[in-house]
Image 1 (spheres, rainbow over the protein chains, first blue to last red):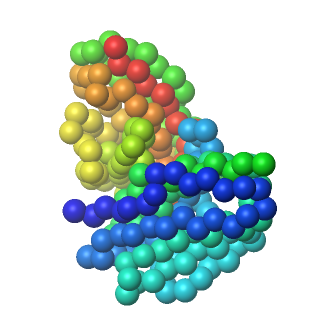
Image 2: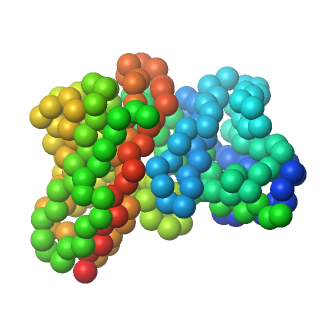
Length: 110
Length: 115
């Protein structure tokens, strides 16, 4: 089946840089999205990669390597408010269905 | 703000009772989705709809049915609730045309407890 793997938790300090990795299964893969969720609230969209390379949006960047079936979310200049769960989610084939990873809980310490 | 509301926001019910959750959107988006979120499982797709009366199953559809009689409303029904259906349920919409992918926007969630 289609599944995604990401670390369950990551801890970093304020001002640091953290990278959250995500590996996915290749068959039918279309593109990789990242979502943020605070305290069980509504997940919110962060970024989307359909092509290899880096997409930058402010302090957040996302990278995709289709040949390695791998992507990551890079968070720079960490702030306390970045403490949240981060999900990678892959589109497979067409039609807009997303398959989510289990989520990575990021804790930012002072 | 994608104009998505869910009702009820919280519900406690007993095993064996029917439950219907409602998702309402105000922007006439074609695609609507129901997910459940459980610890250790992330978000899992239950059912989705690609138009009025057009629905399809997701990863975890057993025990759930859906209906979409109007563009703006997508209903999720648990015909006979079980304790394993205790979860947080999220509705989402996307603007995808069906041939391309697009961002999904999520509602605030419904916390359902089945005793």
